[in-house]
Image (cartoon, rainbow, N blue to C red; front, side):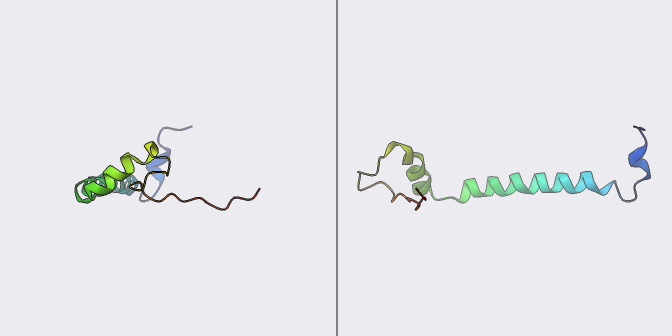
Length: 68
């Protein structure tokens, strides 16, 4: 394959910029979510695997109707 194949594609220089902007916005949004999320929700999600559903303080568990 020729090294200069991308040089002949019109508008190819915008693709790295778009990918960087998407990458940056995703992690900026993730950082904003971490600072905004309710601490009680994080605590309940952290302890979710520890509860078997018999504790009244545990969040309600969803049991899907799976075909047999």
